[in-house]
Image (cartoon, rainbow over all chains, first blue to last red; front, side, top):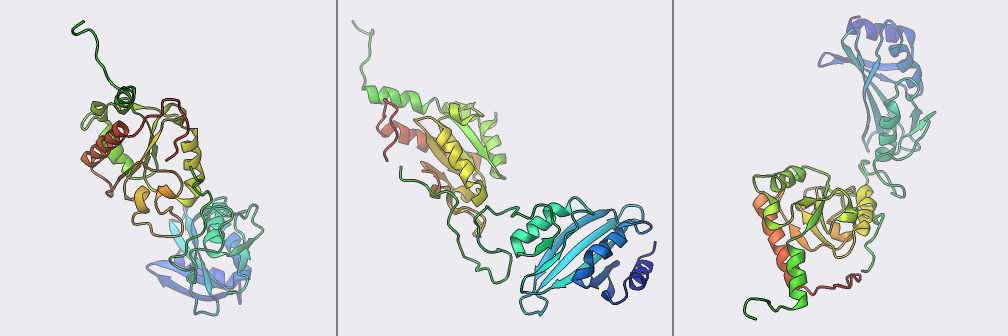
Length: 161
Length: 158
């Protein structure tokens, strides 16, 4: 399936959801409403698009935008050797988006990492805990307003020997 | 009686024995491990200095080589490993990350392992060359030689 056909099919299947489409370095990019992400992802994973691989899921913090957090998903179709990038904006207050862990298993840890680093919540995630930082760590270190030199108390302190 | 006995202080004999029989436990987490391997293997041969016995259990080791970046999340593990070692024990901070956090001046990395466990010898370098490591080892031997030996296996007080 050609990349441009995918964009056309998406626009037809989800009127009003796809806000913007473009081609970036031969990869189709769509910007969608965050609430429709699980439906769009399921549509892309199903035949005939068959985007069976979730290559990466991440987030970008734009403090000046009204939709501060931008979720970025990279999908890959092994059958068609095509890629697609999905973007969705989330508000600064209580950013939350549907989990894709039921569609792609690796989304489980990718979403845990995003939760850890950016504080984005994933509704429907089976086990939303911090992935990289320890329990008791406060804040989300990859947010732009996390102080660069902020140090948090160590998990263990060296006791007086 | 000539040639039948030598006299020495008990402390000196004990420290001589200890400094040439260091059983080390490599706690390797990052790229410094390559230099550790290089030091430990035939080219530089740490065994020349009596530290060739690598033990892969901290309970059998008396020299802890902390080689590589220690993150905040790993800190409790390192502390446990140190606690599992029996006295007498010495710690070498191997490489810039263990000495000071190195280039990782950020939220995730411990800024020097001496925040968690006491350190005897700091070996700087990113990563340190094997010669530097051997120099650090010799300095540790010098330290063992001169420090008071507690032969009753009490907890170190320093």
